[in-house]
Image (tube, rainbow, N blue to C red; front, side):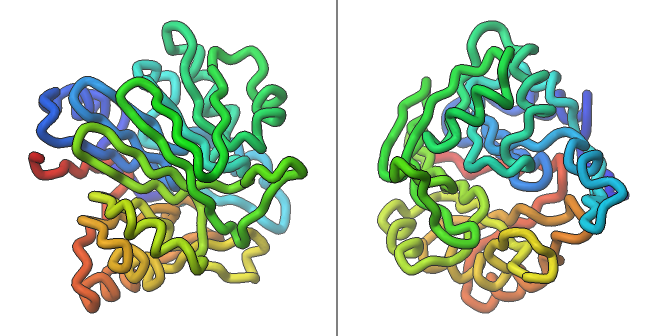
Length: 282
């Protein structure tokens, strides 16, 4: 099993130890599509999956979710975070076994930004938590503390809407201070996506690279080459891949991503689980 670069107390020490000036910001990859963002003293947790709920759920079936990378931190150790996102309702982005203990470790209500289409499910799946559900739809912006989050559609595999016209799969353009980052959630390429991102020119684009193989029998994502091309088309300062090295049946090597980034001249950083990336000063 792949070991995180930092985990448990060592990871917490690294998070606490970065300078709390606002000249730059820091990102830790927590596995799958989960990232912790820290800017100054402020923290945002993106799509965390920090349990074995899917491995347990599919054990003994014909679609086993065999974990590749050891968990880097227990969710209850992150009770200090200020805001959490969930981009859609798939368990690796909306996990009760992660969100419940995390929320109960937090002092007071903890904002969870999620698609408005999933508010009913959240009330069921997370009953008894301290989460404060804040629904958002594509095209809307929420300001939560220091972070402004604008939702855009994600295609997983397609753009889908509920009966009220609310988008089921979202990505988030996140603004704080002088910075903009894009967290895709799960998405494939669709025609409007490069233009939407280019209008926002993210300093960092966080994109999936596991691809879309129908034999897996799950919704697909960008592959490595597509992620590199999308980041380049968006004018992203740097692109960081995610959604790989979690489950054996639904992963991909980052080599295709690296090669395409090099070919198109796109700055990129491949993190290992528990590893930090720090921005230049503004």
